[in-house]
Amino acid sequence: MARLPRLALPGYPHHVIQRGNNRQAIFGSSEDRFRMLALLEEHARRQKVAVHAYVLMGNHFHLLVTPDTEDGLPQMMQAVGRSYVRYYNDRHARSGTLWEGRYRSTVVQTERYLMACMAYIDLNPVRAGLALSAAEYAWSSHGHYLGHRVDRLISPHALYWALGNTPFAREIAYAEWVAAGIAASHQQALTDATLKGWVLGSPDFVAQLQARTPRRVTPRHAGRPAGLKKN
Figure 1 (cartoon, one colour):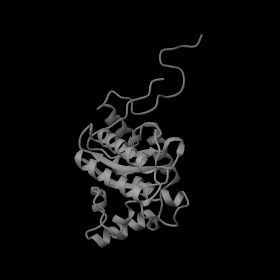
Figure 2 (cartoon, helix red, strand yellow; figure 1 turned 180 degrees about the vertical axis):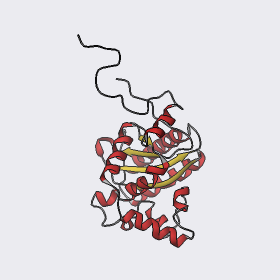
Figure 3 (tube, helix red, strand yellow; figure 1 turned 135 degrees about the horizontal axis):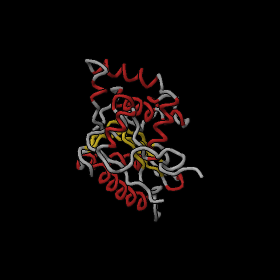
């Protein structure tokens, strides 16, 4: 069955996952991670993609982004992917592919899932046993939102600014939000929707987006196709 084209809609937040081929490592050193962040910053600015959150794991990375244009996200990911593979193969004296095919992505409803997606991304290292708390992990945007450092890659979403009237209030509110964790149902929904490319949101939101694109945004219902009758 032919694979669906990726859905990229300007003005909406997208959760993105890019994995290493056969789950192999894509970062071998801090220098590799710094190079990836530099490439993301360069091409996000060039393609007008706002990066709200990220985490670099050993064999994959997550992004939460909002593109300004329909082509911005795919062009950013293509440029970053190609440049990083050239760098990584040269540095580590290897050749061949690095990625597990195309990146995976989904459009998420802002009001219902954006903050949950940020917490999902921040807590990835905790779920993987790499840190006891999100704040302990250096290779994510969490430190920026806690005020521990300034990350030029990050463009905070309006929902983050609404957490408080001062930087300190926002930092405390966000830390508490992430520390509280996210519901298992939201975690599973974010994973499934991103890997399968289905829009994540309320029925009204999904219907609104379906009206904007000929590309199917939800899976077909299982069962007998419409119009067929039993004998």
